Structure formats: structure tokens, C-alpha cells
Image 1 (cartoon, rainbow, N blue to C red):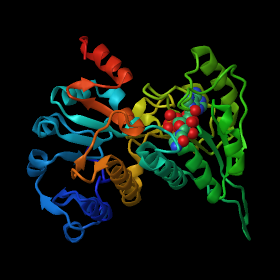
Image 2 (cartoon, rainbow, N blue to C red):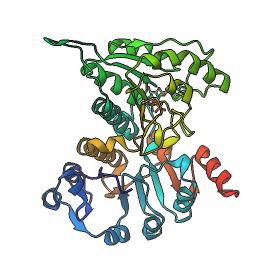
Image 3 (tube, helix red, strand yellow):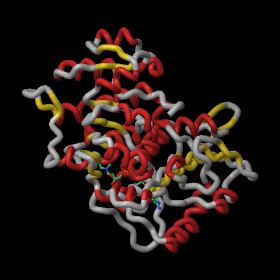
Image 4 (cartoon, protein in one colour):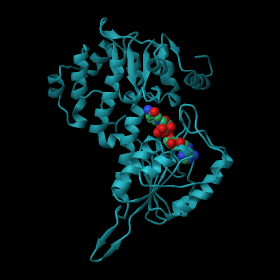
Amino acid sequence: MPAERRVAITPQSAAKLVNLGVDVLVEAGLGSSIQQSDGEYLAAGATLGSRAELLAGADLLLSVQPPSDDMVASLKPGAVLASFLDPFFNPALISSLAANGASALCMELIPRTSYAQKLDALSSQASLGGYAAVILAAQRSMKTFPMMSTPAGTISPARVFVVGVGVAGLQAIATAKRLGARVEAYDTRPVVKEQVQSLGARFVELDVGETGQTEQGYAKELTEEQLAKQRQQMAKVCAGADVVITTAQLFGRKAPRIIDAEMVAGMKPGSVIVDMAAATGGNVEGTVSGRDVVTANGVTILGPDNLPAAVALDASQMYANNLFLLIEHAWDADAGTLRLDSADDIIGACLLTHGGVIRDERVRAVVEAATGRPA
Ligand code: NAD
């Protein structure tokens, strides 16, 4: 992915891997996007190589973005891959990983439990994304976020409305509060109300009937009728906001459409929307992934497709650490190799392809639907 600036191994994580007993081979120039030189990787005990050498020789490949078809084809038979794979939207890739006999540790499928928290790359990246969304909005807004009393007059604080209070939304609320904005937030999961309030923001109550969450804590999908009710009541809050940040996602599915064109048309000229769900279809009608759109009434809709990459150094440190901890978790020190124990809670959940099989039945169903044959 051309705009990707994050890396899967930092000099710090390379040193920890070497310490564990892993031979670390790093693609020459890997760290240039985060200003880490090859020399720093060498000093950490890593060896440098070309991409072709890495792919041909690696027992374990670490990556940020899903690998290309060529990369999958170049992997050693039986190689292990640990990466984000976007598994519900990449049936061809998942199918070819299985067909090539690769063992893919899918970072999106790490369980969202307290025990697995330090390996949870979705959370580490979403949190940084939530921060980056607010900074982006603050740069593009014509208003200051804090209240300011100046000899020339008093400036009111910006009104920020955060829709979706998962990991990204919580960090967005915290960041906007730190910048001095007046923050409101909404989520269909009522359990987040207290978390919103504890950050000093107001929880917006909407009457949309029964909502809730799945056993894993993910939002349950609303019916079309509920979404319509939600939009109707939310329009007023959007109309009063200077900045709207949408973060709503449904696990394994297209993002819900929460803000329609009519609601955008009702917003103040100059207001800014950051649609953090742009890459999965967008929460806002009119969002274009990776682009900025200015509507006829002067509302800017930003559709960033890789917000964590805006803070690539810290995002890389967090992600590389998630990967290190995953490897440490599965490391068999006696054998000096990874042990992929499918009975282990974490490995069992994130080991997506192994021995030619797609192990996660939800992903397998997506692949079968896309290819029209049993996977
Ligand atoms: P997510 O990215 O899947 O979704 C973001 C938010 O959007 C969620 O809070 C969801 O409820 C909300 N949403 C969905 N549809 C909506 C709609 N129509 N209107 C408004 N909001 C809507 O969420 P996430 O950040 O990945 O978190 C998912 C769950 O996992 C949460 O329950 C979170 O607390 C939990 N979690 C637990 C741990 C842990 O225990 N270690 C770690 C991370 C996340």
C-alpha cells in the first residue's frame, strides 16, 4: 500500500526478537518511513536483506498490510505470516494463503479479551487513529477547539460530536477534551455511557428501540428502521456541531450508514466531518475513501483511509510490540521455533489458515460466497 508508513519491526522490537532467539532479517530501507536507519536495525542484531531474500528464506513473515499475490506465491512452503489481513473483505487472498499452505496469524482475529489485550493490534492502531482523527479535524476546522478569552473578544469552544465509542471513539473523545472542545458522543451500546461521562463528555441518548452487543462486545447491527430513527434524532446534534467524528464499525461487515446527505445538508457551513469508517464503506453519505469532499453547503467530509499511519512512529512501535508479544506467546524456547497450538485461546482464534484449511468459519463462509465453491 503506497501510503503505508508504518513498519512491522522497529529496531526496539528487533532487539527483543533477537533476545528471544529469533534470527531477524529486515528488508533494507524498511525503517526509512519512520526515520530509523538500517544501521539501527543492524545494531539491534538484525540482518538486512532484499525483499526476495526475505520471502524465500523466512519461516515467519511479519507485515503491516496484507501481502500481495506475488508475495504469497513467494513464501516458503509452510511459512507463517502475521499481519493485518482484512479477512472479511479479502476472499481471494485468504483463499490463496490456504491453497499455498501458509499459516496465517490474522491480527484482526486476536480475541478482544483482557488476557490478549497487549497483543491486540486493532486496539493499538484504533486508539492512535482516534487521536489522529481529532488532530486532522482541528487542522481543517476554521474554529479553535478551546474557549479563549482575548482582549478582542471571547471565542467559544468547538462542539465535537463523536459517533461510535469503541477504542477509536474513546481516544477521539479524550483528545478533543484535552484540546478544550465541548464533546458529545453516541453509541448504540448503552454500556459506554459511563465511559463517555468519565471522560467529561456528554452521552447523547437516542431512542432507537432495543440495541446491544454481541458476546465479544461488538455492536449488534441495527435494522433499517432503527437506523432511520437514529438519523432523524441525530440530525439535530450534527446541526449544532463544528466537528463530527464517526467511528462506527460492525465486525466483519460493511460500516453502518449513520449520517445521510440530508443531515450533512443541515450542518453549519465550515463544519468538518472525519469519517473514520471510510475504508469500510463509510458512516457518512458522500464520503470518498482517501479523499476530501466539500459539499454544496460548505461541509468538509474527510475520508482518511489510514489514520494510524499519520503517527507512523508510535503506531509502528505499538504494532511491532503487539507482534513481538504474539511471537513470544507462541515461542517454543526449547525447539527455537513457533508452536502454533490451536488449543491455545489466542492462537486458536487468530490462526486463520493452517494446513490448507481456512479455520475461521465466518471467514470461510465469506470466501465460499465469493468463490462459489467450498473452501
Ligand atoms: P468497532 O471498531 O467494531 O466499532 C466502533 C464503535 O461503533 C463500537 O463501539 C460500536 O458499538 C459502534 N457502533 C456500531 N454501530 C453503530 C451505530 N449504528 N451507531 C453508533 N455507534 C455504532 O469497536 P472496537 O473499538 O473494535 O471495540 C469493539 C468491542 O471490543 C467493544 O466492546 C470494546 O470495548 C471491546 N474491546 C475490548 C478489549 C478488551 O477487553 N481487551 C479491547 C478492545 C476492545
